[in-house]
Length: 521
Image (cartoon, rainbow, N blue to C red; front, side):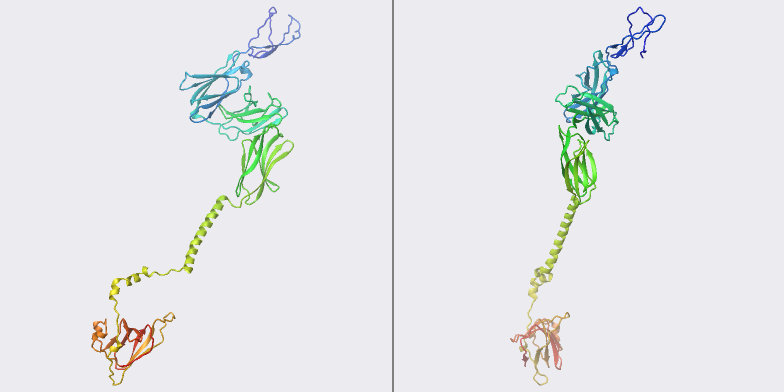
């Protein structure tokens, strides 16, 4: 601590040396004197003196950001450091010396000099050791060491919602760090002229909790500046977020070309583009507004990194309008208004309805085909596929089939009573089946006889069992089929009767009867 004044007791000395002053610092000096007694004189005219520079006393604080171009290629290593305070710089900082060494090859070192507060190096190794030295005319600062292992590299996202407003002769920056897992200790702001090779950049650092700052130094009217904002967390820094601005209009960007990209039952998605504009009104911010008629449903601010937005929880089959609005200090300028109507059904609901209708139509066609076939194309039995039909067509049945003929004219009929006997065939009413349907194919006739004598000659009865022949005197059996070949067309089937002394009726079933004929002896 230098005292405010120093008492010099020896008046013979015309020179006095003040020790302990800070390097590269200005001091104001004045002299007052007093005799051995009396009062002090007035102070002399003040003079200013500046101490010489000395080597910086502190190393610069370094942070880095690694950007990988591709997995097989080299890496872009950005190193950034904070300018030394004037009390630590001890003079004008002339530049910075940056060296990096590969851990696997410690004897291979690469050195570069720069006057800026950042440098981008092209490296190929994953493990590096970096040193940075700030130097002035008196010497260099202590080394700032940084060990980097790219295999354990963490990333810090860039800031968002960056916007610049122009106020008189200064620029007001606004940003947001968002939700970052690492704590943001500082935010670095860099601005330089928008040229292919800017001569120098200017820097300003603020606390990590700050969300805005004012730039008022090194700004010229009519000049466009490129502004970069870096989040910093200790030795790690995020990538820069850039924006163009000038003192006349602020941010030189505008949102244009808004259009609808998707509409569903309950959502609407709109999209727009950002274009650089050199001349336009001072826009404080842009907004996208959703309206239902005259009612404002939702309003959101949009920033240069946002080019699309989706509105949720909308009504189905309802008309809305989307408005792109530019807010200025005097008025709001409506850029574009787009009418939109939400759908009645979602896409998946439409697909479900189509699938269900298709399945229902398929089931209906299958069932209707069966019904139509039953009514209009009934199934006809195929005799060839019938078990009974195949059994009847077998050859052994053909061999066993025998025609049985009853020759009535060779019958010997004897009138035992001494009178002429006769056989009378008469047709009765055809039988009716149980279901009430008339059966024209069969008829029932009565054979009236008084007495029939059948000779012992069995050649008149064919295909008759032995037991029947032995009992022919007691009974008369007509089995299978009997046929009368006298041309009268009488076909007799299944006749059965008994030989009785009196007139007896024999029941016979006839297929058809052409006439009625009386058979005599």
